[in-house]
Image (cartoon, rainbow, N blue to C red):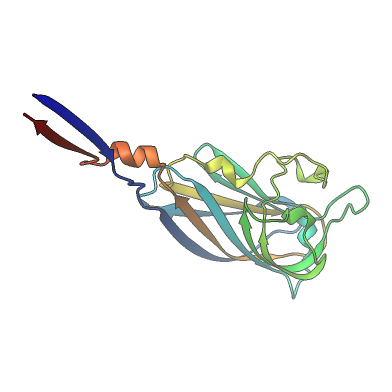
Length: 210
């Protein structure tokens, strides 16, 4: 009697999960002060291994002559630390940075343009950009500073817990208000993990011949 076993792996890949959570702040950012403001969002989610993070920032200074080149902002969660803004536009030839008086930004590592280099340089700035990522004191941040603190620092971390946004103004003149911010967490299971974690992945067909 001869037995033949066929092992078939079903193409299971699991489901992608996304959580989006926002917070209204409406707090003025103190002018030329390292104290700044903090805003903490508590997250409860089924995402225990983050694949990617996106952050939306809404800042305005239309009535106060806001100056985006003064703004320094970072996001902390667990062991992750990402610099979202670090005096955008600041360079050796432009030490005051960009003069945007309104920012409506989506920050995503996969965007085409580094927010530090974004145009227009004055007025309102909106769109999707890479985070600044320049993990350096705002007083010496330049366009040439290495970018070592992108949103990718949160990859594989558990999404649950506190996410803290810090925003400060690093130079005198022109103030802005943090109106709100939104956090989006994504998780896409690896195919191998989904296969190992599922039941009934194998189907054995037994065929007998006399």
